[in-house]
Image 1 (cartoon, rainbow, N blue to C red):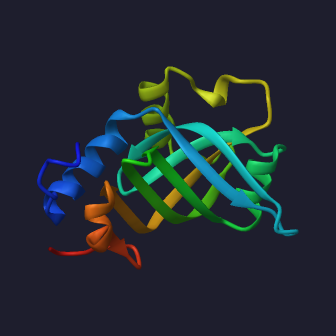
Image 2 (cartoon, rainbow, N blue to C red; image 1 turned 180 degrees about the horizontal axis):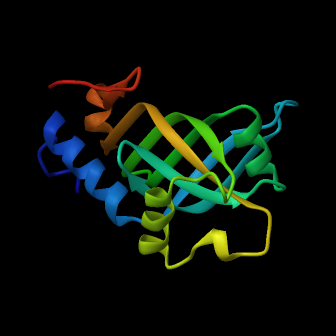
Length: 153
């Protein structure tokens, strides 16, 4: 989108956002530990059902933060085409992850953490708030979801 294109309506932005969640492979994951120290990493993800699924080691800062506190901010795009997702994470061991989620993750990324020898886990992020905007002109109506419920136009 360029600055000369018309501002997208709510349904258009929602459709574009869902398409990006299906299409894109990497997402920025921001967490903080109990001491408040922030951690920002890019991870592979899959949009499956009504949630985003991530995989990382339980032993790294992101895994510990997701398992311990559960709050997370996810980000796609650059400053001209942004998607922000604030959500709650739920941790799953390699043995407890739902089979359909693990298969969806592998189908998209080509990697099944369940076959890895490291201390990986899966994390289901349930969106609570979703914002999406292209350029400054879309900022006033950037909220697509609040309280885990998609808004209406």
